[in-house]
Image 1 (cartoon, one colour):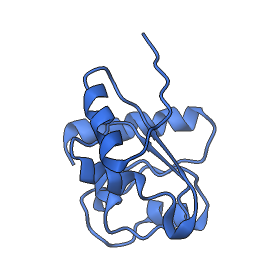
Image 2 (cartoon, one colour):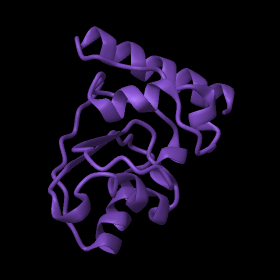
Image 3 (cartoon, rainbow, N blue to C red):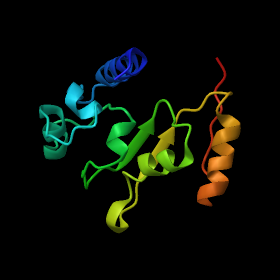
Image 4 (cartoon, rainbow, N blue to C red):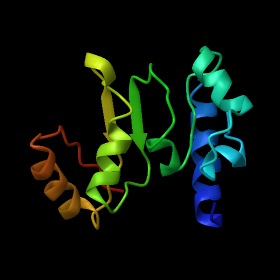
Length: 128
C-alpha cells in the first residue's frame, strides 16, 4: 500500500466515523491483496460495521455477497477496474448503488466509461 493510499484510507475512515456509522480500518493484509480473512473484513461481513474503506484490491477476489453501496473516492484509471469496483454491488440479481467522486480532471474519462458500460449515471456537480 502506498503512502497516498494509506492517507486516502485514513481520511475516508475518519470522514465516515464522523458521519456516525460503524467503520473499520482495514488490516494491511487486506489491502495488499492477500486472501486471508482479517478482523475488519470479518466484522464487515457479519454486519458489525457498515463501512469498509479499502483500496482497489477489494474489487477482485473478495467474496462479500451483501454489499449494497460502493463509494469510489479515487476512481481507477482503467475502465475494467472501475467495472469490477462498482460490480461489488448488484450481485446475484440484486440492485445496488455506486457513487464515484470525480474531479474536473477525471470527468472526460468518466463520461467515456459511461459509454463503455452503456449506462448513463446521475451527476451532481459541486464547486469549491
